[in-house]
Image (cartoon, rainbow, N blue to C red; front, side):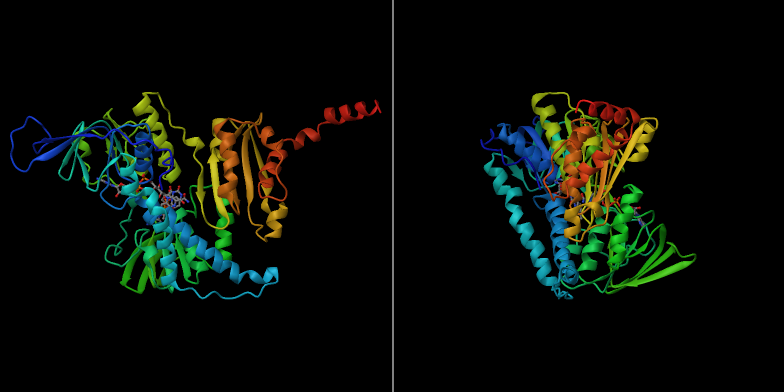
Amino acid sequence: MADDQATAKETATRPQAVTMQPGGDAAAPATGGRKREIRTDLCVIGAGSGGLSVAAIAASFGVPVVLVERGAMGGDCLNAGCVPSKSLIAAGERAHAMREAAAFGITAQEPQVDYTALRDHIRDVIAGIAPTDSQERFEAMGVTVLRESARFTGRDMVEAGDAVIRARRFVIATGARPAIPPIPGLAETPHHTNETIFDLTARPGHLIVIGGGPIGLELAQAHARLGARVSVVEAQDILAREERELAEVVEAQLRREGVAFHANAKVTAVSGEDGAVRITLAGGGDAGETVLEGTHLLVATGRKPVLDGLGLDAAGIRHDSSGIAVDQGLRTSNRRVYAIGDCAGGATGGYRFTHAANQHAGLVIRSALFRLRVKLDNAIIPRVTYTDPELAAVGLGEEEARKLHKGRIRVLRFPVAENDRARAERREAGHVKVITSHKGLVLGAAIAAPQAGELIALWTLAVTKKMKVQDIAGLVMAYPTLSEISKRAAVEFLKPSARMPSVRRLIRFLRVFG
Ligand SMILES: Cc1cc2nc3c(=O)[nH]c(=O)nc-3n(C[C@H](O)[C@H](O)[C@H](O)COP(=O)(O)OP(=O)(O)OC[C@H]3O[C@@H](n4cnc5c(N)ncnc54)[C@H](O)[C@@H]3O)c2cc1C
Ligand SMILES: NC(=O)c1ccc[n+]([C@@H]2O[C@H](COP(=O)([O-])OP(=O)(O)OC[C@H]3O[C@@H](n4cnc5c(N)ncnc54)[C@H](O)[C@@H]3O)[C@@H](O)[C@H]2O)c1
């Protein structure tokens, strides 16, 4: 989903079209079919979250833009990522609520799940959002949309179908795809990734998920709630990039819901056919070898940038396995070319989120259109895993903060179980953890709680605006809301001062005045 698109009111000046020879050189002798040349200010490759945002904002300023997309408009987020996964998760929540209803005095029921109808729900949500990202909408904004594969043929030239595009600036936003690990037998064994799992029309009997990161866990919990038996196999700890104490909250909840975990396990072999897969593990809590037998296999072992066929070398653009190398201004080694979103490596730090791609888009606009100096700040990008409870974090974690601030930090916690709203809803697992400097500057926060993805907004503001935790402690939060958890964690910062003898002496002294 592209952000920041709604502002494109005026249509952009159209790019100029002329005819030229193959190979991209207007002066070259004709050697075959003629290519049409398009001269434009901005050429964006990829119409996913990042590319659409750049195109929409540039068009809203009347800048001529060519947008090249070889697949579905909207990219991964709309078609195989955020939107289908959150639609599936929403269905899982409904099923879970039916099973858990007895605690509220309502007869609990085992939900009957129709996976074909579930797939239709997912498709319907995608179809509802698709017009926002559509070719028609972007053309109406004045963007020239080419449904082709783009390839650099020179430092300032891209070929796309029968067009050669010469642009002042290029933005590469080609996204990422599932990274499939080289496990013996995996390539020959039927398996799903995020590109196919949302098309299931029957409930998996036993879904084995390889990869205990955000994708693996979100989909594991959703399918378990929809009635599938689910096992997760992970080479490291579960949600290894997050703080252990918070990842453990999520893991414990999934275990309670019946998900089996095999963490710190090595998959040594995969075999089988449709409906009957076998995974052989070494480690994972068992001394020897374990064999898991399942009906379906989902591979969620990370993402790799989509760079194939882009002709990066022809344009002098450096890249490696983490993506296109960019500096803090999102510029590649070719100064005319930026790279944003999931395909970018280097200074982006591998933050692969729709909102990170949108943030990149905003920076590129300032740099390419207004020639301003821009600088990425990864510390202000929140990350959320949409399990239940959700796990959200922003800024520095405890270990990182301790290192950077030479141990002079404060760690504040407050449990969800002491929040009245959470109690009323019987969703008491988790806590908020806030890291500050010894003077109270908010360095980071992490939350495992219901709606942690919403709650992290306050801490994202605090980190972005370099606020002090005392500012949060002084906020009036509506009662009863989950947001009170954040305030109560902030108040923890002030508690030691309430115990200071000097403060108590002052109160005793002030009593003298009546
Ligand atoms: C299952 C799943 C769930 C996710 N959930 C979330 C979430 O809840 N929140 C969140 O913030 N993020 C989430 N993400 C991540 C999010 O989807 C990505 O970070 C985001 O889509 C990246 O946007 P992008 O523009 O970089 O790439 P994409 O959206 O992937 O778009 C890239 C586009 O470029 C096109 N392209 C590639 N090469 C070429 C070429 N040579 N010529 C022309 N076109 C080309 C592709 O066809 C594609 O349409 C999720 C991802 C997955 C897989
Ligand atoms: N809620 C969100 O915002 C959201 C949701 C899903 C995905 N995403 C984005 O997509 C990215 C990719 O997600 P992901 O979960 O696929 O990747 P990830 O890299 O976060 O996690 C993949 C996990 O697979 C494990 N793994 C790798 N090879 C393995 C093997 N052979 N056997 C067992 N385990 C193995 C890794 O140790 C890792 O923990 C995320 O980093 C995130 O940026 C975001």
